[in-house]
Image (cartoon, rainbow, N blue to C red; front, side, top):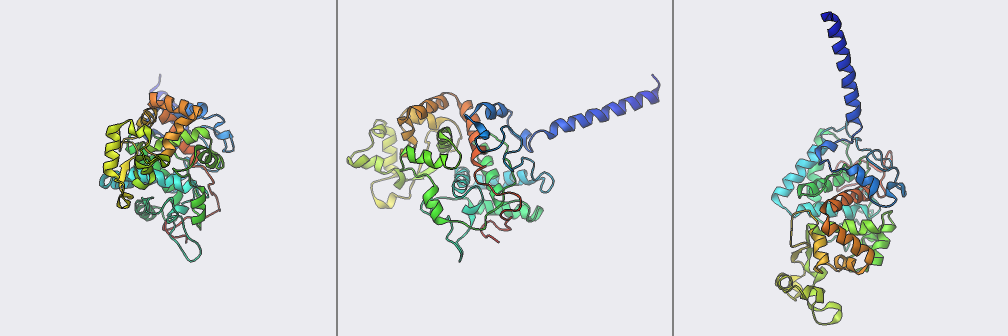
Length: 369
């Protein structure tokens, strides 16, 4: 073959191959290749009954509602790396922050949607969510989100919402502690207001019966399976003693410890040492999952199978046959839990989002303007 003809043929086919490759790569969400390839597409198609067709748009890793996995690819291409770096810096100084960032996302989404309202300070116009009973002296990570926002504003001013930063930080916190990766759909807008009353009303309480907790999930478009799956976030983090102290000393007014905890004398002894029966111990901290305090795994479900879940709202899952069956499955199959947790987190992150011209992009996460 003539050298010029061969050169033209080779260049043409190389260009076509390049175009085909780019088209294939662009079909994946931004950042997808940063995470483990554990077949999450199969998880979205075979995970929760109804999937995202139950009022949440299409399934899979394309567009969910009006959110887009590649929303900032052009306007802020380094966004995900900046969030990852910010979470890592915080985690190096305080390993507890991983659980705090995950909880921050949960508490944001359950109060008027995933709109960054939990980050707002009180103003003359409203009392915010920070001092609501479920959040006061409990929810943390505001400074971490604000630090990340400051970095992002330097690179991409008035482009990235605080709500999206919270969603990405929660994912990075889970990955950093050994949990699953999931692509986060983006494009949320920030709210202009917050509501202490809504936080007091909407957030599930560890003291509520399972029926009430489930009702709060269902009212937001989640389901019973999501209750069990998202409870697995308690595989990392801590609880203040006042939340479970009654189980140590006066379970259901008996003057005795909860028989389930009493059956594990070592655990009961450690908990009573951490949380003596005096008011001054109320704010002391105990690990939600003592078996693996800062490792995101399925040990939480193993604990429930052994009747040593720390909170009432944890151990109560074993009182329902359907929940108990899921707990058993997750205790035996960590990969199943990781897959389903990723599915539920994307569902939760889609609650009540504002997009397009609704809401704002805040310059500082603590202020609505």
